[in-house]
Image (cartoon, rainbow, N blue to C red):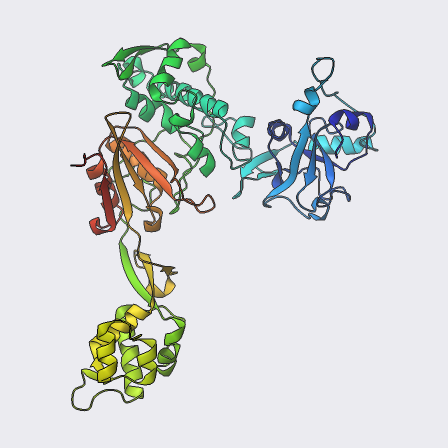
Length: 542
């Protein structure tokens, strides 16, 4: 059992009280948990705020008024610092504004929180100290989506102004967005896109926009570059199919209904924008938010850079020229790791039985063993004698060739080397530029291929999907950005269905049959054609 906020307002001090900024409280009141980096007004924290303890949560703006109740997921009282920490601190149970707060047998709504309560702090100086925590604090992203606050330089928007609360909290939790939040993000992105054209193309007719605007042009130039996708989960959420509109056609229709644009159906299957009401206050008074920075690591990319758009330069990939995968040199190396039954062979040859070897490195190891055991035929050095170890470890006698070799007692040297390779566990390493094999971390199994799939959607529309690029040091979002411009088509990046949420494989999707463009983009990044597998599902089966 736990008390309600009404109980806390009438009985000060019955629970340990924790604090966090007001914009974090807003998210807690939406069902989010309080992350460890979001804790404020400490350390030290209340001694009773131990793991499993029920605690109250208040905002720094109103530090004496608890507005949420939760359970400690960790021992908060033992925390020595929160900046840079990870994970959940308090699991939310109840808050002002939830169903329990609104429940009443009289049908009346819940009571709003008071502005101030006596009894939660014994010293007025403590109240002032809690409020002062807001001075100069900022929010930064942490790897697991926590809220990191500290006296650092405030985040800035594109125009140099301080980032909004909404922008800051985009880092707070790495979780998928609700449909309402996705709708809002798409609407804001479109308004931002138009506003950006108005600011950067003031002297051009229609601010550089050429009407009519097709659906793909709207997505590619006015929406996708301005989506606030700060985390992988948010990037996966911000897809047009996850909005309430479900497709770009209905999204444009909603903009027309809001009198922001004038649209018209064309060819029955598409809608185009004929005009935009540039005088609408939504565009003129819009305040830009700070766009996500690119993550150019070999995994997923979280955004499109700090600025809304970039100017293409010769040799650049997607305008910024900051994609490190372009021009890289890759080589794929097949490795073999001895299984336990082969350990004596490697030990006798003074080689590490737990190491990984190329085929060329294994041959002298096998030769060293044969020579040490005097198994090479004196009359023909290409023939070797099978000793009991080789007969048991390499030949199992199940196949006809095995039975013949065991009966004969000798085999060609090359055949023995091939059998030793087959008896090892396969590994691989993809090396970048001048990376040495010894410095790589081999992975088990056969080397993966990048999969390019063409399939038909919505009747006769073709889309091209690309997955598996992370293994080749290619950032999915950077690839999507380039394909969006090269193909003049909309693109999206989301987690491949069936991949692990903890270590996701991202899938790039581009509208249209874009196999050649995808292959060209991958070849620019050092990927050989032989490493790409193309699946064309658009061809009708005979």
